[in-house]
Figure 1 (cartoon, rainbow, N blue to C red):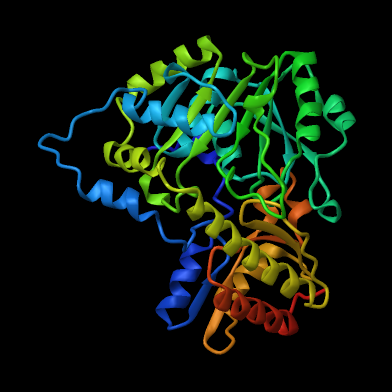
Figure 2 (cartoon, one colour):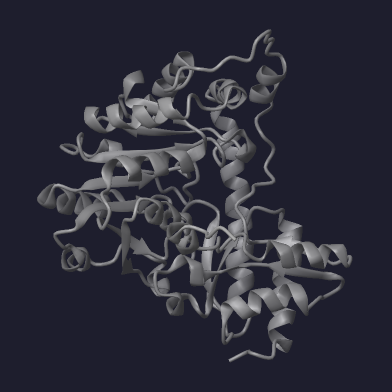
Length: 398
């Protein structure tokens, strides 16, 4: 029998999706599953963008330009300008979701054995793309009791080695919901400048900042024009995860040029997704205001509800629609599986993402889980009640 490659065998399972077979089995038995494991918003996709897509008349569905449809890239320049970011169309490569942008950047910028420093917990799929190019993620632990604020900058300095090639920031953060401040990002910028590193930035949750806080982009940092590579996506911004359109943004001409070789090799990003995304740029601010208000209400229900459960702790996220919670359980992997295989309350159960997959050392997430608040408030309340009842009877409670 042919053997799987060593690299293939090293790829980690998705911390977010690995329990899906157990959720499917629970549903097949008639159990209702409240999905708090995945960032799939139930928010309505902008009607104007869907209408533009539906009304598009195409005789031949052609390849687009490898960098993306020019008119869409022009509209993306308009979009970033709203945030005080000036770009040109030849600084943007449209990608198949933000994931392809990540993979392109890692491939172009990292050599085998190179290290990327990332505050943890971190988005689990970064590890997959790092392993694909034989790079190594080096983590700097953040603390749930500070809401996962940026770790001391001295910790970054201590982690830098001759193999360090990049620092990566997700802002607002997935999985923690933490929103890095301008001051924190400027501290990171100083380290990047000092050691001449790449600064990778995942800013796909830019619109989702709460309590009067504003997003500050790494593209607004002065003197880092050659260092910054940004990843973006329409998936969460417009509640359009199935569009599969993102982009890689950089002012580094060499990074852009080499990334274009990859873009040409995969020919072009999805045409229908680009048509949708171009129209979505015109989505009015009222849409985002309404969505943000809804997420704040949901967040408050989650934080209040979790913190009322004995033994649990939930920090207050400032952005995105995630939070990591402490649980009084022996093993979050076992607990999250048990919820799906052995527990129901009023015919329902809840699906969480064990936090072990968001840490370099799984032990740091052994008593934690990531939850999302992408479902409606009534369902969130029911899911939290379900979790509370589960913790009363879970045999591995500590």
